[in-house]
Length: 226
Ligand SMILES: C[S@@+](CC[C@H](N)C(=O)[O-])C[C@H]1O[C@@H](n2cnc3c(N)ncnc32)[C@H](O)[C@@H]1O
Image (cartoon, rainbow, N blue to C red; front, side, top):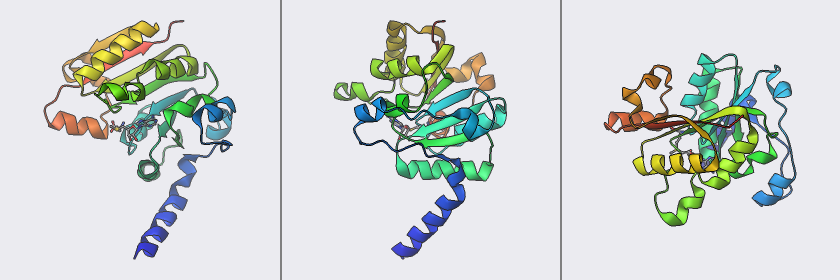
């Protein structure tokens, strides 16, 4: 039974693997070493065009990614996810929608400077990143200054971070960190669904759950200074 399940999963992966980015493996699992040895992704080679690249970090099962690609044929999106099982779900979502401007990268956020040249990314989407409320985990939050440093380096001048969360505490923390780091805060909303930004909103899997529970959605748009 287990053998058949594995066989089915392998067949599924084979069918979807055209959406999986497979950059050169690092010589070590140590993130610091992996980042030092660069293996820059060549967007023009992968997408066969020179459109700008956007990143979604922590893409989950890929609903936002495929809808973003459908609405924005003028951009390429690389959706990043660190959990291998969830990457498989995102690949299956991509396969069903079959966009030509989406690729999925199995990587922790920490290692992204290995793959992306400084100043090469147009925008970064952080959709419902885990809020990690307890202080020992603060360093793991995707808006901790060590991650803002990575985003700042990868973004082109004027490039933006789009951040959404259901957590008021995580929103307040992230707003403070982005301001302190030197990002310009273009917008900050404590109830996205009552703001004009809702017109262009793409609902994610987690977002749908929170909205159905009646929770407000917080949003920040922050810009790297030119
Ligand atoms: C709460 S889920 C949100 C999923 C999706 N963005 C959504 O809104 O439905 C957070 C996702 O981020 C991923 N994640 C957390 N930390 C990460 C990291 N350091 N690098 C890459 N992905 C990460 C998790 O594996 C998980 O799939």
